[in-house]
Image (cartoon, rainbow, N blue to C red; front, side, top):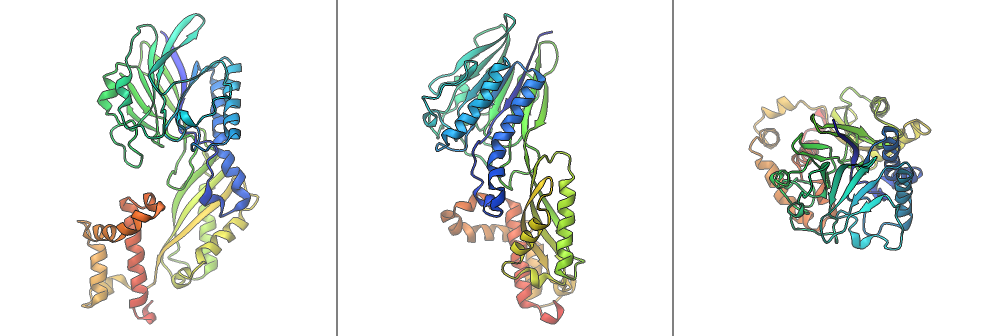
Length: 419
């Protein structure tokens, strides 16, 4: 039985600046910036250990067109190590690193293939004189590619497996620019064995066989919206059996989200201890390698709610947590926010005949999302001129805003003696 083993990865985003996070704890700036390259180093290490036949990289190697020469040299270093071990690498450019932004004077290892942006090309993977597979690929010549590149692929050989390398949005996947848009059926119709996709920052198997259609996801998370393990796919295609696709974590910095219930806290010290315990719990997870970035939301009705609403309260708590975990392994960076409420009796307030009761009932009886839609409509002018709008476009974010608005209103409306 013939087999072809390879690593499929994408969206390395080497040299990502991590601007928002790095400013919180300047001492961690370099560790964050190095994390994207170190995750690629983990891929190289895995390829050598597993003695794979090839490494496929489906675009967005760098974070932007202004990527540094240093980033390109670091990437080349990894490719050279693969080449020295007899492992060929195959690369396509994506929207973050179109081919017109790469250095044209930098020599790449002989066993590295970078596909052009004007047409689909195919390159064989040969082992001991036998063709194991043909890798087909096409790059982005510029950032915005709106045509369906999948339809340019055409299988024209019988020997070996056929693998398509493509940076694209399949089925108009939300949350990502609709570049090189195509449908699942477009890919199936090409009669390939495997589609190694890039662009979507989440591991997704769109189709398990005949053909396999897979997003490997990004190799290292870069912000708090990208929680959970990140890595690559270790793939084995078999001529007489189903494909084997294994997700392999490669990230060095892990991003996690959690809620911290402080409803029993009667002092800031108790709130701080609850935060520390939650961070310790997250840090124990086996998949966390070197660093932990945690988004924590304080919840619950608490006697210290008013103190937590003071300007700078969450920043001060986060700084104290960073000091507490200084020198800890893994190192810790916390993003802290609060959704706590006062200790007033919500059920009693809802039974009233006043504005407070109307407010509570409006917020809690919103099954048809009328309130949510009104909030979105009211915030449209802000979204139109604010670069951060893409981080506030899902239902969970709007519900969080609605809850905060309700609690702030209650703080002002309810008699202070009951709060």
